[in-house]
Image 1 (cartoon, rainbow, N blue to C red):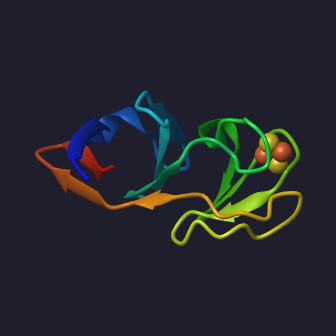
Image 2 (cartoon, protein in one colour):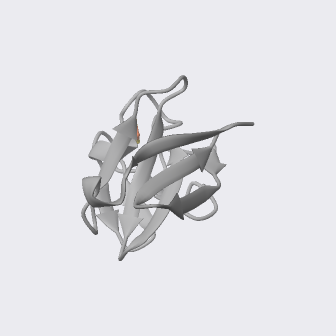
Length: 100
Ligand code: FES
């Protein structure tokens, strides 16, 4: 476990997400000003969840439309059945840090 700087607070608009280029990649979501971090790769195949459709605290994968809860990582709809990892987030000095 290690805290790393993922991005600046202004780098992710509300309702948007970015991919952080770590291994494995992490997605940072801005949910109405709150930042949430999950694994970026969908557990169904290899799609980037940061490229998915964000609806509140859920993301819908852009490939086959599985939905995940951004807080718990739980797979909410098929075709995904496995959860995505979630990571602790801290905001400090206008930067978003994630514990990976
Ligand atoms: S790759 Fe995400 S639902 Fe298939």
